[in-house]
Length: 250
Image 1 (cartoon, one colour):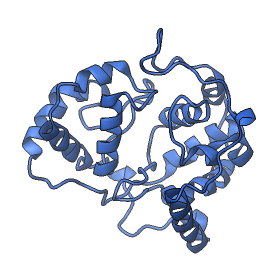
Image 2 (cartoon, rainbow, N blue to C red):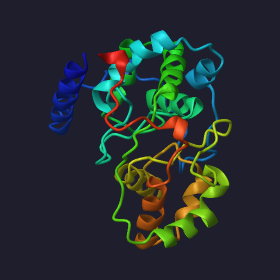
Image 3 (cartoon, rainbow, N blue to C red):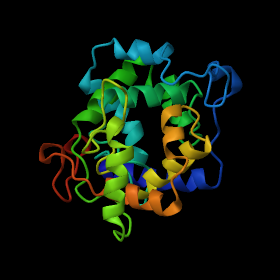
């Protein structure tokens, strides 16, 4: 099973790179909500599938079945790729996963690679969102995430403490109740890409408070703080052993 999934991942990435994946037709797309820059935009306004999924009891067995679609890119272990092409999902807060999936499906966050695979006809409705988010939260995290060059970590540590810890926690643990993602152990290159998109207004479901918070940061600041974050070790009970393979997909 794992060999099939990993082979599918390679084929999928190659297909996506050449732009030959057909997106769902217009009739399949929900009405788009307000985004960063729109008048009266409110971060995490909720509603729709997000609210529905949050009030459903998750079924981990179905979550595993739904995750098989996700595993083609994020890998069976949920570790993504250390080069940052695909983020680590393992161990992420369930409310964060639910929000981001609902936002992608509602076209409130641009992700053309993921969008066709996240649609209801591929993975199911709000119950599937609740199920897969819960399953992802059970996966142990990568003990060797992608990191930066490690040359400016003291500067990064100070920047994180002064600017990021208030929302993302003193250890990068995030906050499930407030929908703030876990950052510790996330791949450096993925963090850099999302940071730049947030700063430039390209991540349309971003928190305006964060956009303002990072506008003044230089390229040096960006690299230093995100390199530091990628090296924060999650709690031991959340980290998988080196070389761990998800037995659910054997």
